[in-house]
Length: 192
Image (cartoon, rainbow, N blue to C red; front, side, top):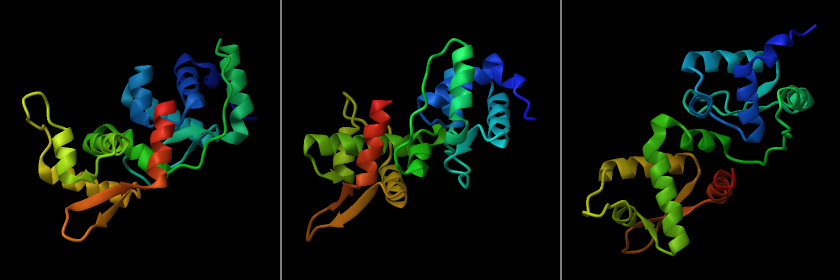
């Protein structure tokens, strides 16, 4: 028989509460729950071993994404209801979870910043170029806190994550276009 008493511990319940709302990275869970880093990771590993949570990006070292395992959905809802939370688990959309993990990773701040700047430029109808990104990131004094090489590196990473496609136009600057994955991911992030 599976040991279940530990599932009702407050620190486990709070992690389950945040995971039932939307998939999260360990860093997001640590920030939301205020549970110390190693302890939150240990809880996630134990929940994964018990098949209560799934890792959507098991091969990633940075940006792992965890969610409620669909086969344990009823158990998690019961635990949360017992603890005073009336939350329901929703089925997850097909998303680029690897990119989601990187965009929500504390160590990938520049990738996240460039991604959101590119989305902003697209929404304004401005071409997504390295120069336009740099101009958009300028503060009131006209200074940017990110180097041109870091912008280029982030753009390469976004291409590698399949969130952007470079488009070379004849005699013009290299321009980028957001992929459908990027648009779906941005919509998901903004809705949660």
